[in-house]
Image 1 (cartoon, rainbow, N blue to C red):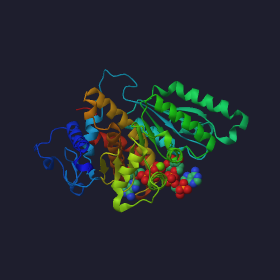
Image 2 (image 1 turned 180 degrees about the vertical axis):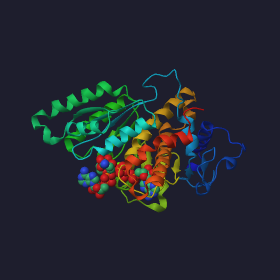
Image 3 (image 1 turned 60 degrees about the vertical axis):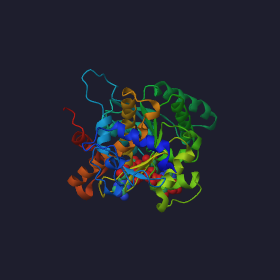
Image 4 (image 1 turned 135 degrees about the vertical axis):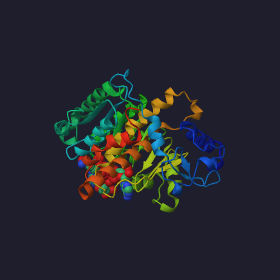
Length: 377
Ligand SMILES: NC(=O)C1=CN([C@@H]2O[C@H](COP(=O)(O)OP(=O)(O)OC[C@H]3O[C@@H](n4cnc5c(N)ncnc54)[C@H](OP(=O)(O)O)[C@@H]3O)[C@@H](O)[C@H]2O)[C@@H](O)CC1
Ligand SMILES: Nc1ncnc2c1ncn2[C@@H]1O[C@H](COP(=O)(O)OP(=O)(O)OP(=O)(O)O)[C@@H](O)[C@H]1O
Ligand SMILES: [Mg+2]
């Protein structure tokens, strides 16, 4: 049984060791963890359901605020530009310019220093006009703009152009507003392979999930890959990988199985609660956000997760925990990103009610982070 396995116990210890000591510190696991359904999400430890004796896919309610506080780097005056993170979004085509913009600007608003967008030429001018803060590379091409006999050379030119930048990025987000053009997706597959070789963490969302669902080799066995499926994207993944339908009664087991079958990846299944697994533990963030389901919230999430995942990696590296004792930084990134989006959505809804849209939520990312983790303390 996973719940009683040494690896499971190690994960519990790791999650605890990352977080600050609990005021009512006790050696018992029960003193530190509580069933997910009892959790307010505001204690200083990660809470779990049914403690150690629980079933294989026990779901933990993360103390997401503690995670955010822990991994967010201080605003150290000695730091230079770039040290708080350089993020790239691969997405943006004729149809979609909002999604890559939301993801890239959210990365900046959360605290990254630089945010790039690699998109098609059609999308680039539009995205630039939304914001001068973003660095926009109009390099992707769709089938309609490339002759058959030019495809190989255009594809290799695109890869060369992105590869020039790749090593500088702390995380890339593949998919928001990417579209599903076959030539463009082939080029993006090459970019993903290159990112993997360079050990760059990668958040796969939107049409990036469409791409990998049909080409699992792009993420198989990659511990630096985070998949953030919505309800449709999850359904497609489960059907493709597990060859069955989504079953809510065995939801956490199914999520764990999905991660294990793909191998090594972290998956955040978005919904009423965001449920996160790396195939070993299952954690959820269920802090209430907003009842508005306007399009684009997943894009904010992917940009935010990219920043937090890179901060979590840095945090764990600089705190020198032995490898076998490390919490998965990708999981921490998902937990933090989910909480921040939900807090911002809640504040935006309080102000705008039914008219709340994605840009309103982005406006509150700063305040939400400030409330949890003040810039000056
Ligand atoms: N403001 C913006 O720019 C925003 C842009 N956005 C961007 O939109 C893109 C799609 O993401 P989404 O979330 O709408 O697709 P999703 O929920 O999987 O599917 C819903 C239904 O639609 C269908 N379908 C979708 N795409 C299709 C296609 N190309 N061609 C054919 N069918 C397609 C799909 O059908 P199925 O695939 O199941 O057959 C399902 O039934 C993605 O790049 C995202 O980032 C969003 O982030 C929101 C804000
Ligand atoms: N039923 C729900 N109740 C509460 N929050 C939800 C619900 N569904 C989604 N969310 C929140 O909205 C965020 C975005 O999830 P959603 O399923 O809308 O993604 P998406 O469809 O990929 O979004 P996008 O329109 O950006 O593509 C999730 O992180 C989650 O916090
Ligand atoms: Mg989406």
